[in-house]
Length: 458
Image (cartoon, rainbow, N blue to C red; front, top):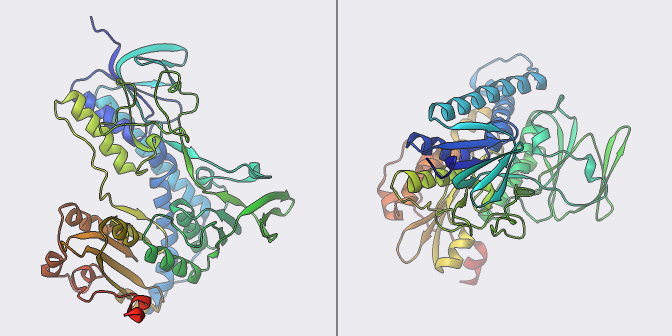
């Protein structure tokens, strides 16, 4: 008779938890997964997928506007927000159903309810206790807001995806990718957007050139970015809300959205009581095998607060299944993970930023170009594309590829393979470009970029 009810019990049915459970079940393990709300997690239900659908919806505004330059006569377009939200909800329901079927087809038992760890091998769900040789924590993260007067009036990105109507005016607080993406969505669809950030530039942690240039492009699109600004309080009144900054400025708006960070979902899960080491923000501390300080308890995804991206959570989850149930030990490699920001225009990036490369390698060579893409020549759109390579001056290896402009995420995905394989600048130079395309710029960059202040110093 088995010692435990299951070989693995997963808490949280998001992308990471589902990927690990499904693969483990396919390898013959006895697996269960519990979820207190709905199968799919942040990415499918309230993150990447619905947000990208809204981005697609917003992009039609540009398409209609640009069409005239290519000979099209387009009647005045009319946008209906409720119709987009209804279509989005239908697609999310379809994807959630697919996740459920994938789990069932792999023999994974789905248990409805919130899982709480009782001890290293026991989880309580809806008043019943289950035992497992391995417990996998995949509970993700949740939006976090500061403690200021009036914070109870704000919404997060969760609620922004389900608004009954498009706001005429919205204040978005935060400069990370979630805030930037929603600023682009609302602004392009016709809302008056004010984005408040504490830092001088958007997207802390990204390459500095991308940060500055994205801010420029967003401002040209009508987003009012207030840098070096903090919110002191939020007041509700009959006409909407008043956001008061620390400098005393008052901003009238119909809606206030906060996107100032997310906190790992570990509160009330019993992890600390079971001996699992947590960081100050509640993140589960794991080793290179995703194992916590308790050998039988593992964790993947945003709950570990390392690289909070859906494909990373999936890769971490699959690595656990391979290691534990397929005799194929795999450690997730967190270096050179590509990422994208579906801002307007979008960003794609892989490898090191210029600042990070200089810190780690010292002498680096920079190659970059900013240009007007061909599509914009006939449409008359002023938006420009930017590409950049960061190269190790000693070995000629490409350390980072960065792009701001249409199709940047699609282009960088391909370049990520080259960076992962250790490609050199010479190999980029030897690659024939596809013409005419924006992507070819990455293999036609020949002149090293010297920053003006360095040129003056020389």
